[in-house]
Amino acid sequence: MLHVQGLFFRYKNITVLKDVEIGLNKGEILSIVGPNGAGKTTLLKSIVRIVKPDKGTILIDGKDASRMNRLNLAKCISYVPQALPSKFPISVFDAVLMGRRPYIVWKPSKKDLKVVADLLKSMHLESVALRDFDQLSGGQKQKVLLARAFAQDTDYLLLDEPTSNLDLKHQMEVMEMISGMVKKKGMAAMLAMHDLNLASRFSDTIMMLNAGKVFCTGEPSQVITVENIKSVYGVEARVNRNSGHPYILPIRPLN
Amino acid sequence: MEDICQQYQGVTGRKISFIILLALVLFGVSIIALSQGPSSVGFRESFAALFQDSGLAHGIIWKLRLPRIVMAIMVGCGLALAGTVFQAILRNPLASPYTLGIGWSAGFGAVMAIIFGAGLYNEYLIAGNAFFFALLSSFLILGIAKFKRSTPETMILAGIAIMFLFSSLSSLFQYMGTMEEVHEIVFWFFGSLSKVGWKEISMASVMILFPIPILLKWSWDFNLLAAGDESAKALGVNVDAIRMLGVVLASLVTAGAICFTGVIGFVGLVSPHITRMVIGGDHRFLLPASALVGAVLVLTADILGRALWAPQVIPIGIVTSFVGVPFFFYLLMKKTREYW
Image (cartoon, rainbow over all chains, first blue to last red; front, side):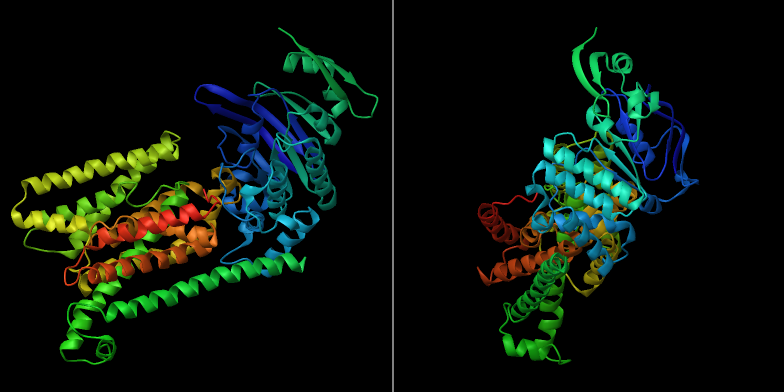
């Protein structure tokens, strides 16, 4: 279980995260939603220690993450960032092989290569395996980054807006790959999401973040409500509950 | 599934073959260099003299030609390695010991030691001072990069500023120096391999060779830095430490490469690019291959510099640019793929 307790993060004089509590069980998908600047990305980065939180503890299966070294942390949590540097001159195979880095001492073993090859095959990336990462489409790039995170072989997977900038089909494919992997390997995934409908369709739990504070947490049907969207996003919306998952239809911004 | 693995291993094999090929080329060029020089010690003679322990030919080979060759290889390797490392840790295709001004400040350190240590020519002082000044400007650039979230352009601009500062400081020395000192400095600015002996070589090789295994060990981390600091951290790389120590080592290598030979500018920038165009951006192969490319480049330039206008010797720094620039342009025009 990934347990975040009393997390605070301050940037200059602005409090970005305020007393955030999260409990994430294996086999579950948690989506963190909220308006721009709510602190979603900072929250994920604090958990993988890309940034250092001011206060709070992160327990990974009971162990304090701040006492683990980076390499061991990288064996527990993988992270898919929102964007990469504009140029990333490396082949797709090598990009995925990077995910094995926490396990490689001098050179990749047969097992490392096999893990990468299997992932590329199962994610339908074999045809581009030796192409340059830079030459891929946005959707393929996201899948490669996902494959890299899977190659890391961790129990916890953190993704920062994995579906932004993707077309409809790639959005569905990426989300299905994530939920498939969570089910198959008993991982837990935490996603920062903008698309409330995708979040509600694929998540076990949704956490709504507003101005660095947890506004509410619960099952999608509890969290995605007309009132919550109104007070957190300032948007008038309709919520349709016919299909099993709440589905929102935004109407207009409120002032 | 075995298929992708095999294909990947095939690609890896080709990269290794390229490195072996480069080593052979370097060996071949060294042999040509060995048989060349103003004295008429030819191919056979020079080779035989390598294994004799007396005679004129022996002296020429062991005291003049071989040190020159070894130093050329060292300088080429060193500048190319430093360039590759700077490009990786600053994630900047324009980075190299000279575009960052580090070569110039190391040079200033060396010139300063030559002049103020006048009379007591001391290779430790020269090398040490060169390293000190190289580190100074490296950390200046690193500091700018860290605190200003700087773009590649800012770093290069800072490097150019540093270059101007140190080249004008060196000019000041020239202006105020005696004839002899001025000669020394000017000679240094052209870049020259004619003044090196085994003492300098052993000093330089410590500075250049000692960091190599560490840099090779870090090649994975350099690869990961290319994917951005965030990805690298999430994959277990201690980004700040690698960047800091990488700069220290690259500065050490730079200082070692230039403190006895002077300005040989172009190698550090082009060698990594030439290599990347052939075998791609994986530092496990890029580092050794680029070092070999640098060595071949400098050694070839030295042969040309001695042969083109014999018996006049054109300084190595000048020839490197004459050889390197057109070749680099050719590669840039020919390749449509971008590597940065």
